[in-house]
Amino acid sequence: MKYLNKSFSIEGVRAKYLAKKFGTPIYCYSYKKLKENIISFKKNFKSFSPLICFSVKSNANVNLLREIKKFGVGADVVSMGELMKALKARINNKKIVFSGVGKTTKELNYAINKNILLINVESKSELIEIEKIAKYKKKIVNIGIRLNPNTDARTINQISTGKKEDKFGLTEKKFTELVKYTKKSKYINLKCLSVHIGSQIVNNLPYEKMLKVIDRVIRKSNHKFEFVDLGGGIGIPYQNKSKKLNYKRYSVSISKFLKNHNSKIIFEPGRSIIGDTGILISKIIYIKKTKNKDFIILDSAMNDLIRPALYGANHKIIPVIKKSKSSKKTYEFVGPICESTDKFLTSKNFQKLKEKDLIIICDVGAYGMSLSSNYNVRPKPIEILIKGSKINIIKKRQKLIDLI
Ligand code: LLP
Image (cartoon, rainbow, N blue to C red; front, side):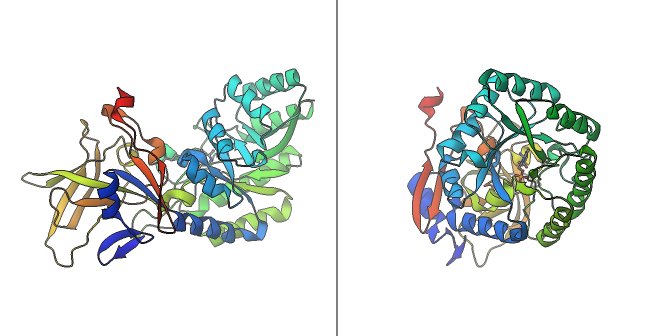
């Protein structure tokens, strides 16, 4: 993805062409970037070749899941719907893990029928429910237990999940109690310890602290875990100067941990695989000048991309056609929705824009489309995958008629 003769292009296809052909807004993904991300993720951790289970919640497009699957990647799912999509994409059931604090009986039943690799249990009640189903089906179910390592992920508060006040996983004490309980169960096979401390993590320290806690808890549990599932959470740089996680250092910490524990590592990455593969192409409807700033009113809104409104996330915005010479302006990029939080970014020193110009909101591959809604009865955007200059429609634009 880059400018070709000042026109932003995805694998050689101009964003301007896509906008003309398909209308806006458009979620557009680059296959090349996706491939690069998966290969480099694998390479970074090749010394212990982990099982990579792509976190479907970050992007649940079946066609993208199909592409991801071709690299031998599995899936981390959190609902029956996600599990169905993963299976539809033909992801190997023995590479699927199921997480979440509130799996219903129906969901557990379905997962057990599909013989997935692991159900990662988050409470004693859930374990008892699984045991009941397993007994009824006369089946042995493979599970993991999610530990709450009480570790601050040092990320955005709303996406931090590993502190004791969070609803996720079990405390050390409850964890070891549950391990003991499973030893007596005929229908439960405890294979895994799982954790996930948060998302958009760019600092190595929380991961290092987490590994220490896991090390201690495994020793205390006195159980041989075939798998240790470290969850996802690796952050990406949303701004040019953003801090990045040191992959090498994380890999070294895990290798050290593995010297004392002979387990297979599972990762559940979402954002680090898909985040920077996607852009949102939008058109300017109006420019509204006020005394202090100019509002750029786009045809995409918080229903298409809610991260800025929900987490105060800053996604870079760039013009589709770059001007070599232009006066610089301060713009506030907003959507047409009737809420003040429907705002993407304030940008200083932006090239001068005019109505009907096209812009790009960057790095929206993760938690972009998957968190989109029909708020204000707005149809969801089309999704396009560019693969080797070929334009593939991987999800049609919703039709208004279907919403009404
Ligand atoms: N595993 C579990 C159990 C998770 O809860 C999550 C994300 C992941 C893996 C994947 O994490 P990742 O590698 O993508 O960081 N909507 C928020 C992010 C919420 C993340 C929820 N859990 C956002 O837009 O930033």
